[in-house]
Image 1 (cartoon, rainbow, N blue to C red):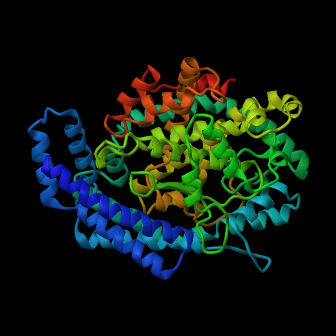
Image 2 (image 1 turned 180 degrees about the vertical axis):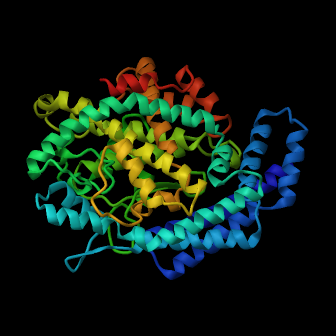
Image 3 (image 1 turned 45 degrees about the horizontal axis):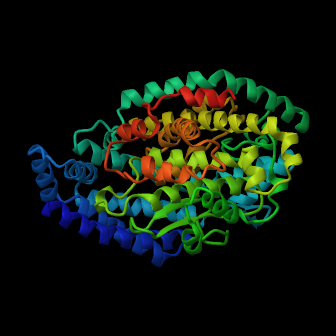
Length: 519
């Protein structure tokens, strides 16, 4: 169909240019990079806001095309176009504001005792220091970016809501779920179920952790800075088993390459074009980006020695493997993962390998006798990490819904209400400030976090299916072809629920995840 062919060719050229500009802005924050990135993001949004094209796509869908691939392409087009139907002045405000906020996150470094600190350095203090006062100040420094951006994040939420309401949605949150093909009622029923599944196991696990921390710090009144990362989303050494001693070098990329080679997935070109180590003016987080929906896939990371960045590189490499393995003959519109949470599932399943005894011996090369000594602790730590992340993820999901429901509300208080409810972490006495705004995803990846939690569930279901069909995942050479044929290659040619059932043999459910958490 000429309409689809012309549109996707136009979008391919625009999006590829934008992805290159975005990449440059993240590896080296500068006014020139930020300006070009914003200009191209605006150009992409305008192309997707074409009202004549939107009407033409709706007319084509009304004609009920008989070709399934064409019908799916038109539906993907409709979803992309719907979220961009807005006044051009409003579009410009949203793009410029979001770009400026992201630039602040990329370049901001808090100052502690006269020294500019990176995220890695703050986490080093929170992981290893026994100085309670230093920990308190380091934790507070990690939140300073929130004060810098909070008012603008509220304004960004208001602008996004304005665009959504013009399209007939109650707010941006509900519009985003609709355009992600996620029914709101189903999502929150699922989140409530995840809450029930994890509440008591988490309470028991955290009780043991708090006992250890109370002994370490000599106080029963634990504060957020007594945990080992600023948001209490990562497994602390006292809460499981630390593997840092086994990863003394900053070579997490090597472990990722070796892992995927066993599944006949070659990521050497990905690693060669990636930017993997920390420096000034570079985004401090990690992500994988598909530049052109072909073979140019890159990872941004900030690798330092230790378990955390090995897990992160395995996670981002899972994304890369998915992107690299989508069927190349699919039309451009469908040459992407079936859903955000399906690629998150692959990434999460891959990241979990860092605590898999067989992976540690066969891939990481850690002596078998060392791994045997901690094997039981490894299984417990892996389940504990998923428990911990689930409780943190629930904070984010419920908070974002509240943010878009009322951007002008008392978000500072609401944030701590949710942290205390889901994470059982008490708000510090007299704490004032927009701690919620220090989380980059709230501004830069809106209405995203539920995809991590759905991805956790699917990761457990995916591994169970792989091991049922292929044997042990670590050395199952059949795992690569299985993943390519059943999970990766269809891209977005079918809705996510169809893909999940086709790949795993069952609809998405919490059954395998419950078994994983209790292992």
